[in-house]
Length: 223
Image (cartoon, rainbow, N blue to C red; front, side, top):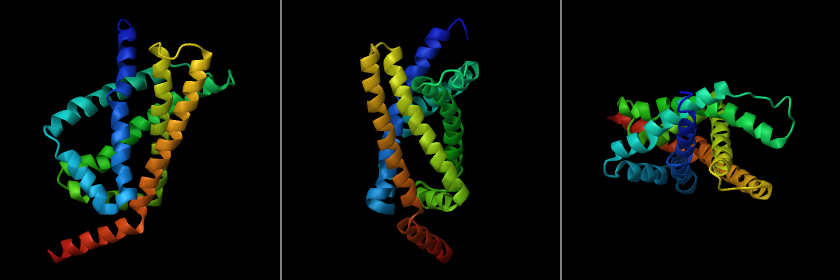
């Protein structure tokens, strides 16, 4: 790993932006349809995504393999890092520390979320049309709801602060002023994306999805 550390770190950084950065934005937009348009709007968004041609290969190459590399190598980087926030009390050092911590939390959260949703679809326990009902069931559990809030905040911070670091490491933001402006922009992005995800989470827990889940359960019992 050491011999290829420069290439591995650059690839790890790049994959955090393309395609994983695009994926988190797409995931935010899809989930936000639950807040904007309710259960049917969310179901329509999920259907549109799953009707894309060659969707399995698009997800495998564009999401799952990059996610696996970015996550596993990120854990290695976090393990190798010197978390010295207690020694140097200033903002960027805390951001560096939080980037490593939120990376670990995000890695665990994403695979746990995939287990509760996408894996259940793959196993035939849930259909794509029932994912809204499944998310209602998950978020109605107070313990899971809190864990999802933590996971969302960790993932959105990791993405936003990672974008700041990407611009620095790739020589796009050069100099203290450019990096300071970039930090303001990306912390603004963190707030916006986190709020949109949290609104979606509250919507899944709300009355519309509760009624849809109850109607689906009644229909199942009738069959």
